[in-house]
Length: 188
Image (cartoon, rainbow, N blue to C red; front, top):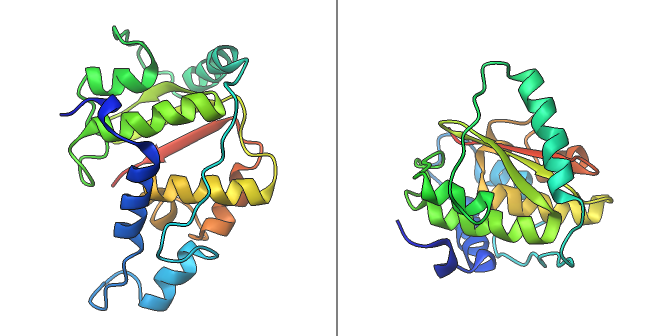
């Protein structure tokens, strides 16, 4: 496993986007037209202008609120403490392998989460064998920004769109995350 600091989040998202939007005529899940419809209005070429924000205030307080909600909804969840500078780094420090079916280098995912910590006040609240739950202090507040964030989420975790959300389009997913103070990811 590499270090999260060795990766540029924007480059990772662009690379993953290219991989997951590639048209494969032999794809047994989606036709080429269906695959293009999933990621509309974006094309196969990563052109997402990554939103830039100043550091976010209130992120830790939001994390505490969401941790209480998460604990209420998942009473069997257990607390874990990790010696790391931030939650994103904790993913790498513990060797979390949630997205192993997509990439075995957790540090790449940590780099993106670290970027979201800065831009959106995201905090790692819970992880599972194949899940990641973040609190978000400053989620997108309009559909245009939410579409950009949805594209990042698709690049980061395509199963959120392909399998975890219906209808499975970026536009529908974007509508769902406007103003949402938690982001949940699941890898098959």
